[in-house]
Image 1 (tube, rainbow, N blue to C red):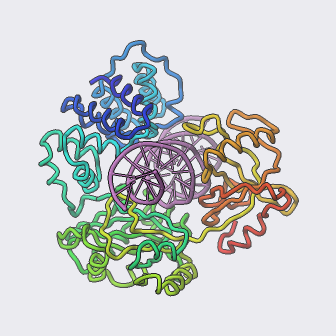
Image 2 (image 1 turned 180 degrees about the vertical axis):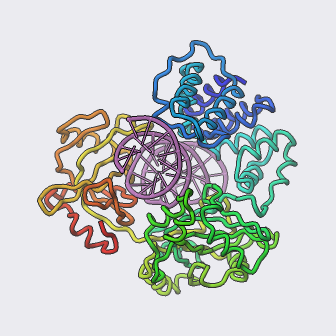
Image 3 (image 1 turned 90 degrees about the vertical axis):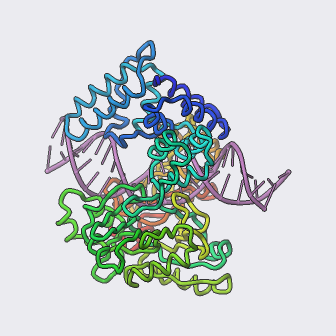
Length: 512
DNA sequence: TTCCGACAGTGGGGTCGCAAT
DNA sequence: ATTGCGACCCCACTATCGGAA
């Protein structure tokens, strides 16, 4: 199959808003693909490369290459070239990479260049990714979508399922069972604004501490242990102490879900930055493990002794977990039977925060493990802080925000009467707000840059954030975590905005 | 008819590893 | 030694479609 066909379909998918039409377009393409093309066509239209990331980004791809006049590239040829590029990325020079990219782009038409750019940077922006591609695959093979979805969750890969399905038909889906050693997509949580809201929604539930670390899925099969991240990357080699911990548990074969986190000498959690730095260290693991030892803290059991627990209610999965894992290696929790136990749940949240953790996750006791989904039966509750900050500048948005000033630069007042930038945010804005701020900020503009506008610091905006973290990038030595706009405060003058001093005082545990 | 769950998009900061400067 | 880039951790929020209620 020619690449140009994929580029055309991708463009058509991007141009239509109806999900059903997107699905139909993908299904038609999948049906037409030859068997050899399937392992390429399906991931491409789901917006990902079969090779995974290539080590090539926006910078290298932005070098202009004159487009070909006529389409000639086949998907298999593109796949072979990208495989070659991936190999060069591991070992070779950037110049060689740039040459190969230039060659590929030079052989592509303008339309194909656009498609390849999105594909390689991982931003196809066609309003369809894995979930829509799964529906398309189901339609193309006349298989119930739910069955395909489940197989993809269990395989952790759309491509694997697609190949099996197109080769052997719907019967092939039976092969995809929960298996120790093969990671499944983890269940994720929604947010709730308070414990009472969460308990109201869920009824009988467990309130568990939420640790600010890295999500891990731990598989043990006898002496073999494997550890996977949320995106199913294998990080076993970076966490030797997790392997030891898994081998000490009372079970030979299991899959557990939990969090890995670094604690200090007093048993308080170290900052997320410290845990993340440790888990990210790949080269000298021994030294990293000595300096920042990490511990696993488990909260769910997906499989024990080859029994698939996914469809069991959480209560039963937790019973299995408690059989295998001693108390100190499980998250703290309290059980709540309904709104009448609310005070107890609130106390638990307060204690959890007191111990230095992020917040809590409220989980329905009767819910199954919804692998790969953001299930409504897990609700996280974290305290939210707010500040009134001054808008210093704004950047032009991309995609659906093209032509709108989107990303705000935020400043707090300093002791000397100046303003210190604390970070940026693009979150929390409705379309109406985007329109309003685009006009208002242009009125206040003192300088027009390629990336946006610098404004007179007069507009005050209320910002919500989750906490403070150290920064080497910003002048105050700190930056806001997960900053988002709540509302503009036109009733406030910039002289009334918050100061760096009060911000630091509110987070004494963070030292700039 | 209205409501709500699931998805995709729009980017944020930090850290590590690697290649180029 | 420093700098810039890319990958991958953490993530919030809004708009939209389409099935559920």
